[in-house]
Structure formats: structure tokens, C-alpha cells
Amino acid sequence: MSDRFANWTPPEIKDGVPTKYNWIVQHPQHFKLGSRTDIGAFAYINALHGVTLEDYVQIGSHCSIYSVSTIDDKTGPVVLKKNCKIGSHSVIMPGVTIGENAIVGAMSFVNQDIPANSVAFGVPARVVRPLEPPHA
Image 1 (tube, rainbow, N blue to C red):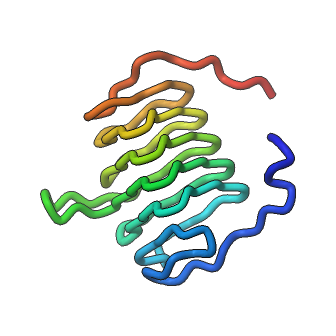
Image 2 (cartoon, rainbow, N blue to C red; image 1 turned 180 degrees about the vertical axis):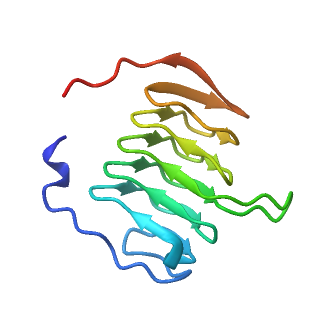
């Protein structure tokens, strides 16, 4: 990983209050933030039923992550695995897991799991191609 995270420290997270990076978490008691994550400004995370961001996750600006949907009453934990990347303005719905190293394109609507080492995008998001796993 690059040196851009050399001085990374987690921000203070208070319920419904923007962090110093201008992203918001509701129900932070159910939110797990991995090390060296990068979350863009104006992202919204509703962690009522659990949201886990593993190490090196990158989330673009204006993304929304929901562990609960009041429109269709779906609930479930959301897990973003190590080193996955979510493009700006994407929406992740309840119960979804994004696999390790996966990439979700900008403006995608993710309502099902995305496997590790794959590229997905669209409304709804669909896997469009596999990625070679990174070498250790």
C-alpha cells in the first residue's frame, strides 16, 4: 500500500454528526471501521444492523450505505471486505457483502453480494469482469 496512509488515524465518530472529513454515521455503536480506510465527503452510513469496513476500504464521495431500508423493510449487516473500492454516488443496500479487492463503479446500486476480485457496476450492479488477485 502507498505511503498516503502513513499518518492515518481514525476520525471521531458521533451519531449523526459529520466527521472532520464530512461523512456521517448513524448508529455508530454498530459501525466497525478498519485501518487506513478512505471515505469521501458527504458519504452516509446507516449502521443500525451493522456496517463493517475492513482495512484499506475506499468509498467515494456522496455514497450511501444502508443496513436498513424503510422502503421495503429489508435489514441486514453490510460488509466491505479488505481493499475494496466503491465509486462515487453509489448506494449499498442492506445485507450486502462486497468482496476483497472488488471494485464497484460510480453511480452503482448494489443490492446483492459482489464477489472478491471482480469489477461490478450499474443499476442494479452486475459483475462485468474478474480481476487478477493482487500479489503478496
